[in-house]
Image (tube, rainbow, N blue to C red):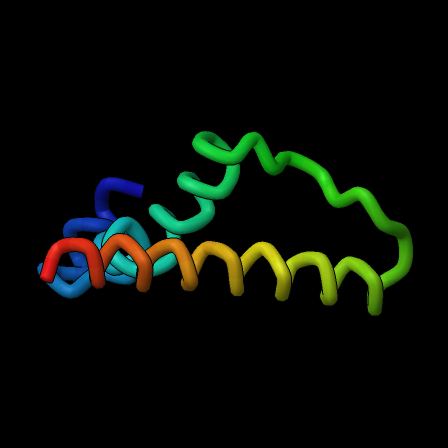
Length: 68
């Protein structure tokens, strides 16, 4: 793994993970305590996940508008 990371250079996929999607999942799991879905079935789970993501984005917009 060290060799793979050293060969990848500065723009490694592993380095991009911590800046792009990983913090969002961490915030949803840690701050909100969302660790499992409440509904069954792929369509319902997708709807639940869409709702969680929508709430996350709305909270980010609300916090950004407070700062200005």
